[in-house]
Amino acid sequence: MTRLDDLGYPIVVADDATPELASFIRERAYKRVVVLADQKVARRAHGIARALRAQAEVLVFPLGERRKTLRTLERVLEALAEVKADRTTLLAGVGGGVATDLFGFAAATYMRGVPFVAVATSLVAMVDAAVGGKTGVDLRAGKNLAGIFKDPVAVFCDIGALRTLSEPHLREGLSELVKHGIIEGDETFDSLEVLAAHSLRKWPWESVIADSLRVKAMVVADDRLERGAREVLNLGHTFGHAIESVSNYRVSHGSAVAMGLRASGLLALRTGRFSASEHMRVLALLALLRLPLVTPFDDVDALLAAMSVDKKTRGGALRFVLPRALGDVEYGVTVPSRTLRAVLGRIRETPGAAEFR
Ligand SMILES: NC(=O)c1ccc[n+]([C@@H]2O[C@H](COP(=O)([O-])OP(=O)(O)OC[C@H]3O[C@@H](n4cnc5c(N)ncnc54)[C@H](O)[C@@H]3O)[C@@H](O)[C@H]2O)c1
Ligand SMILES: [Zn+2]
Image 1 (tube, rainbow, N blue to C red):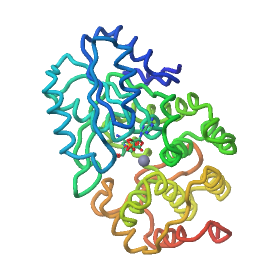
Image 2 (image 1 turned 180 degrees about the vertical axis):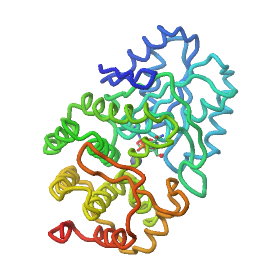
Image 3 (image 1 turned 30 degrees about the horizontal axis):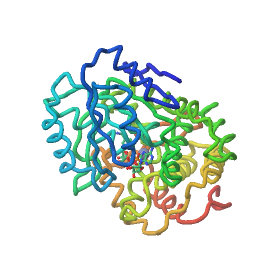
Image 4 (image 1 turned 90 degrees about the vertical axis):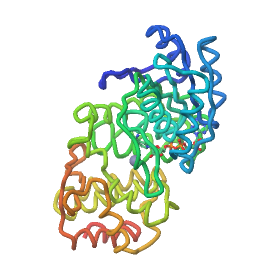
């Protein structure tokens, strides 16, 4: 078990989160717990409830990105009212990033806010979604457009749950691991290079996840409400979100972020910030992890249009997060539009000698 305390609430990474959660609840003397679960992890949620004995009940909801809506939120809130949850009830949200975002939002709004613990069961939720206090749902107009900052009282990364997670869903989290590796540099990046040669099923997940979380937790601790420094966590995401949107969401978030990490490295290289050798290391790592590097379309104008609606735009100018080196990432960077266009054209091609010209 590894425990991080950088954010004022415990983040516990454990092979089996159930006993850890049970002792946390005993210590804090919560009298009643409602376990809210994504249907895909209902068995784990029932296991948690059994460990908590009479104090807990389980409410299960079919989730998935398409159900990350105000409608599902309403169902969750109505269900809470039906079981007469009150302000002292602890809500435990079990599942992937959709579950932690949506149940966290429910906890923030039910009776104007009840305590919430996130039990993360997907890699994305463990290294990203469950930590940092952003909760919310999608609107028709776009992803995560309705939500609120709500800190959980604790986060549990339930590593054992990864055994039932599909390989594509596991892979979704790898791009965020690489992103944290670039932000932190040093051993965090080096160890990913070593691990990338081994089968994912054999990775020492507890230390990998704890290392990656430490990076996110430290950045968030400095800037909880995303006024500045937290922007570094958007590395690869200005490009990534545009790629997702132009592909009509056929390119998954993790894949789009991998392409976006390539694009930001290349843009940094071409604006004289990043070295060719470090850009090459990032590309090699992404490739070893079998993450895609090439966009499946070459509509540069569509990508530019999609980027211009990015949440981080200020006064019309696109601002990028770019690496200066592994372990040194800069935010709020504006770049010449000619260079940007060239980069968007390049990521349509397989990396090769032209990448470094
Ligand atoms: N709040 C944040 O800061 C933040 C950060 C990153 C991502 N997110 C959000 O997270 C979501 C993506 O997260 P995700 O990839 O975990 O998606 P997800 O929650 O939809 O989970 C992916 C799939 O795996 C299933 N699943 C989850 N855990 C499982 C397990 N242990 N065994 C078997 N199946 C399991 C889910 O039912 C789903 O089908 C997006 O909505 C994104 O906006 C939020
Ligand atoms: Zn992301």
